[in-house]
Image (cartoon, rainbow, N blue to C red; front, side):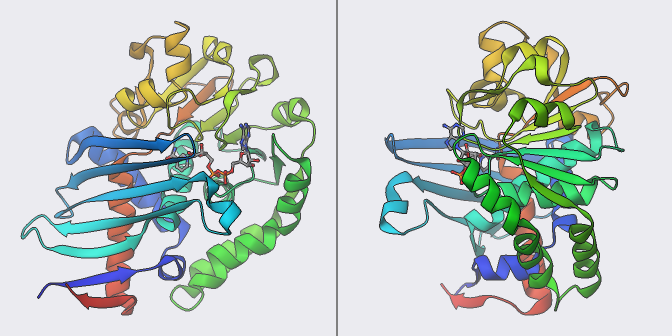
Length: 351
Ligand SMILES: NC(=O)c1ccc[n+]([C@@H]2O[C@H](COP(=O)([O-])OP(=O)(O)OC[C@H]3O[C@@H](n4cnc5c(N)ncnc54)[C@H](O)[C@@H]3O)[C@@H](O)[C@H]2O)c1
């Protein structure tokens, strides 16, 4: 019989720390650029306007693993007091084809998507940035904010804007310090006390403030992260100050949009995967409106491997469009699997 480790969301929280995930997501983009990793065609199916599923899969040669993540979104589940997102990452050995792990996908997705924004910020934002604007206060927001805190050493305040509900932004901002501590520091305290202490210290130093005026908040921010399912621009070009870096996380389907396409007139666009971003990411919109061409867009892996330049001066506006690639899921899943073996975590089943 084949022995497979099953890891739930609690295991992920206690085993993963955001700084380590940022490092492996940096590796994932490198492996895409060097072709050490392969991304296989994505499968997507909509059951209705309120329910869909997608499967992302690929191979990580250097880690000797391949696998897939199936994520399902059933938007009416909240009325049944059930989570809207479900899913599993399955990892296999590329030497034997045997399955090695079944891992909770929503928790892993939060970590790897937060880390994606952090890798881009580290490469593209002005390192002295003091104010972060988070647009969206849903499931991804805490992961995004934690990851930005890890890579912005001068960060003093985080402004939180929810386009649908200022009450939600207020509540989210009030509870955020405690939530970040519980999710990212307390959970790893036993395995990694030194990392936990550093994360707690950073969280304590930062102010979390709900923003009701998106124009002022955009003008005040040096780094902006958008993570909403919006289909209309939320950030207008004229509000964005020179030198700002934006991570557009929310658009991962045709029709989604968070940024004004005119912003691309004066900004340098970066993406995780050029083809995917041009079809389903934020980048689909300026390409459709012919504000930019695909040839104007740079993959972040090329910046990391120095095939392309990142930020050229402190006044440039940079935009990173994250659509999510399988190599991110595989790298994050491999990290949690290795740590589970190290700390004897999870449940081993005979398949
Ligand atoms: N790029 C990636 O790899 C990646 C990974 C995970 C999620 N996502 C995407 O990120 C987005 C946010 O995910 P989440 O899990 O935080 O969602 P969520 O539903 O938990 O939260 C969404 C936030 O956006 C607000 N919102 C809802 N509908 C809106 C609308 N029509 N216009 C503007 N704001 C709206 C909500 O009030 C909330 O603050 C989704 O579009 C999701 O598909 C992308």
